[in-house]
Amino acid sequence: MTGPATTGRRRAAVLGSPIAHSLSPVLHRAAYAELGLGEWTYDRFEVDEAALPAFLAELGPGWAGLSLTMPLKRAVIPLLDDVSATARSVEAVNTVVLTDDGRRLGDNTDIPGIAAALRERGVETVGSAAILGAGATASSALAALARICTGEVTAYVRSAGRAAEMREWGERLGVTVRTADWSRATEALAAPLVVATTPAGATDALAGAVPERPGTLFDVLYEPWPTPLAAAWARRGGTVLGGLDLLVHQAVLQVELMTGHAPAPLAAMRAAGEAALAARTH
Figure 1 (spheres, rainbow, N blue to C red):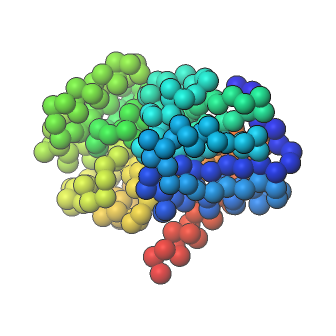
Figure 2: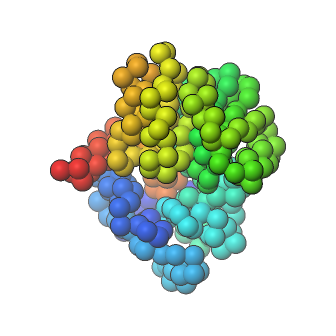
Figure 3: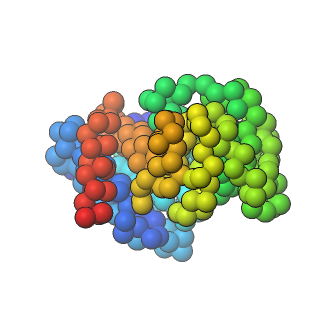
């Protein structure tokens, strides 16, 4: 992909619905400050699927990039000039780079972000893994596991339809996926790596079933934090990653794609995110 220009006043933003609580502006603005990009701005806009085409059409030449959250990650694909293989693999774009010649390039930083967050905590490869849930985040988690898991991934889901979807994703991504009913979700906790992709509250009942010597838990929620499962996991001495780890690592990659500056300042972005979350709880 052609890199964006890095001089002059440039704009970027996060789009989605709902969007009011997005931490992306905090993370990206912290990066701009650390990189000395005083002319760069990063905002948030409430945009749903119906409003997305008009929003993109109105963007001027000063725009460098967009972060996309739900429900736009799939809806944006027909509106782009090119989409990376990573984004194509899960039919989800969370990053749009806007080039100087007016092209819209779609990418997905969630997948390499998950892998980078795990790598930071010493998880480079695992023999098997478990995924709790089967939504959009689960497919990105599966794509990340395709890079680091040498064996089987078991997905714990609530319906036969979701189970079929996860098996299809596995075939598409080259991962052996076995599915199990959610009623057996406590079995997932014995895996060396557990990725929880469920909404708030969904895994709370599992907290009492954390094994004596747990492996690594990646719970993609960041608010409220810690989740009961994450807290119980940490008390047992297991490695815990949270939604902020994912948010920061995918944002680092977005900043690099949009600004052309690498490496992006991971530590400064994480500190800003932690401070923003702490302020919300007081």
